[in-house]
Image (tube, rainbow, N blue to C red; front, side, top):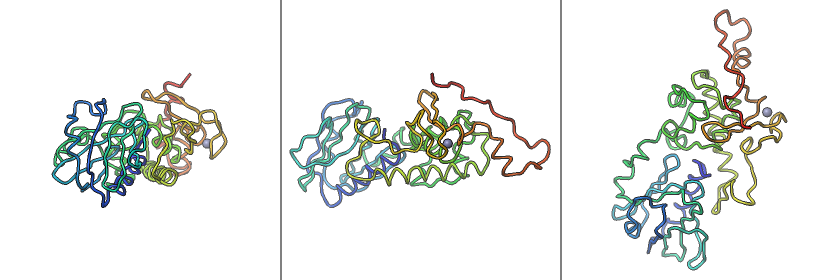
Length: 300
Ligand SMILES: [Zn+2]
């Protein structure tokens, strides 16, 4: 399922494909990717693409003439470029370019979304306005991450996936970042130290960088698609050996989604890291309370 890195790869592809090539015709089928939006409005998306921005998992295009498009890839949506006349499965909308290519929005499961609106209204769309900080375009340091997520009472992984706090993290990259940072997904944000936030912010950037390195290209294959290899460190590896320590990776359900983690590299107790940092002579009263010893709803 596309998250920030996959949407950013789509943005870079679209930018390259549209650069110097005007859209001569835009057409789409009446599918639910348009939700309540006016389908006829999509056909006005012609001419030169002026800007192509992204916030979180949302793509925002503006074209000459003041037309705009908000695009969300949903679970299985992707933009693909083919020669004119070449068929594309599950193509829902098409931009015909003057260079003889067609850029298709392909989406088998139709959870994606296309919303043609006036260019000046794009950033005021409620879905876009509700988004929190984008780690790539707005930066994300330890203190900024703590400010965005620290007051959440939810489990850390669930809070990281709250698009109103940090925009762009989903089930895969939240799990990957927590694994890289050595933090248990069920930790409560209020229990993290400044160092934990710093490590987690760095881990988010590292998880994104890894995803760019592995997936950048014209034709992306999502993990859920048949034949795709799992290149991630912990996501989707339940019962397999942890890539760092060999301990079997565990999984449990969290916020309705399956979470993967290594019980050894990501201990739920926060005591060991505190002790090693401050030393045993940190004094009475400084030892933090130990959090509950198991995730609240382990997967059966
Ligand atoms: Zn491990």
